[in-house]
Image (cartoon, rainbow, N blue to C red):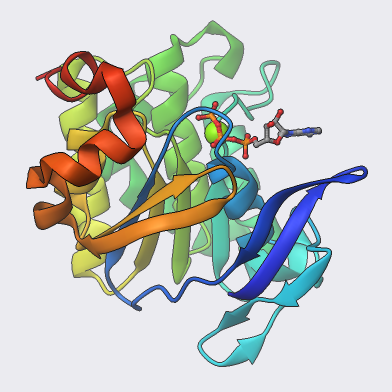
Length: 241
Ligand SMILES: Nc1ncnc2c1ncn2[C@@H]1O[C@H](COP(=O)(O)OP(=O)(O)OP(=O)(O)O)[C@@H](O)[C@H]1O
Ligand SMILES: [Mg+2]
């Protein structure tokens, strides 16, 4: 994305932000609450139209094409807040993920079965209403739904929130498998250590701007950079596990 400014109503949240994400790798965006991380992801998946600037995927202009068209171009987002239909079953929710690119019938069933191998919870609770699942289980279903369309770019907003350590490891394994399969991943994480451990590159965001970026492992070990975004809470936030 080039020189993107975006916001809600009158106010700007992102101010002239440019980011190039390496294809087939994971990039993790970290920063304090309200920094504009979710807004970034919304702009990338065309859920929010920027005030100025452009978004390109593999050299193709996608600015302002809308979320459904973005999915057809291979970009899916798993939002921060619960996005499942509670009255529909786990299976129905997941199959919806194929609708935008018209994966139906046998192809949809086949893809569903592949995902059920990746996420055991899907197999176990396929017929349960999504509204009956725990928060952590819902995250896994949301993740699986996003993968229905075999996206090229996956955007994950705070994927580890509400997950127990075991589910978090399942999720980490899925993210790594995606990257190994050549998918580009952009994730936002509150759990800085977890997020950066999954990524090749880390980007630190503060007040709608990028303040630093670099190889994720180095970013994690740099106390100066940690101080930039963690402030006085560095110890409690990064020493979680
Ligand atoms: N739908 C909206 N309408 C109006 N303002 C919004 C909306 N969504 C976010 N904002 C504002 O934009 C700013 C950035 O929000 P954003 O959600 O991008 O931050 P974030 O970095 O993802 O924070 P968090 O870590 O808390 O998820 C905040 O000041 C927020 O109040
Ligand atoms: Mg957010």
